Image (cartoon, rainbow, N blue to C red; front, side, top):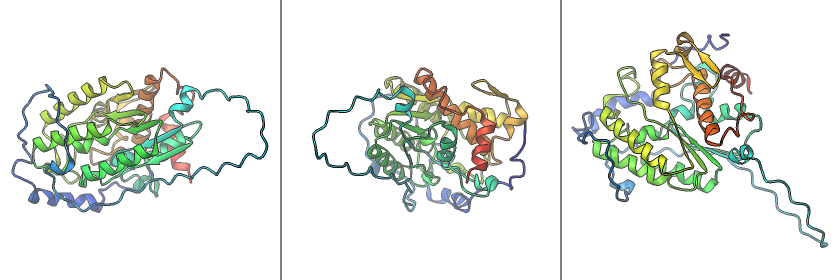
Length: 336
């Protein structure tokens, strides 16, 4: 495999995330161990308001949205004229990718990819390079600082996506900080996750979500301190809850982000559609913090998301996507 990305600069955590090491001093005594029961049975949740969920308060940061150009005004009709012939209905692939919204955290937001590329890049940039025909409209509401205030920032991002009216919403890493994160105990984590699912029960088009990975020793403590890590049994509960919720909704697509990240951490062989990478190559898909994908890893993650969406649409996207991970990474690297 060519290695055009080997000369990337060393990867380090952003100064903002280093401040997380101070969080344990302001969380409750149950934040690291939790108090939730070890059960995957899910009871029907009562409506939950964000204000009722205990969080470590952190200053809000506005979410930057991609502006959408308004449609030009229609010209007035002066003389009656015969109606033009009806145009054919859009194909399934065009309709699916006509208006795309991206929601999520640092993986979707392109955390630290500037260390490799010399400039920022987000999953939205990868998506534009991956599609043969770019979306007619694209909204990027991902936020690398979602961890600091998941409920407030998540509510703003979801509301923006609903107002945008997407045909498809890609939110592969959105659930992550509604299980892990600045919660006082497991009860608060479970309440936050139920709130997320309730908030996503809206008109978001086809909705792609990823499973939640556990936070084992592979994830560097300097990146995510113990106070932000959910217990494994809480992660198991959340994934079971996510599967149950998605199974009841035909428009929701689940992709195995947890398994994908585990394979990267273990440097296992990885196959995406017809493309296979051996363990040595896969090892280069993950940054040194054990959590965030590299440029190649982000390309692979996006193609895994689009592959799940393609399967959901019965293969409608097969000819609409550049399915080569390496070529997609190079296209992003070469883009202006």
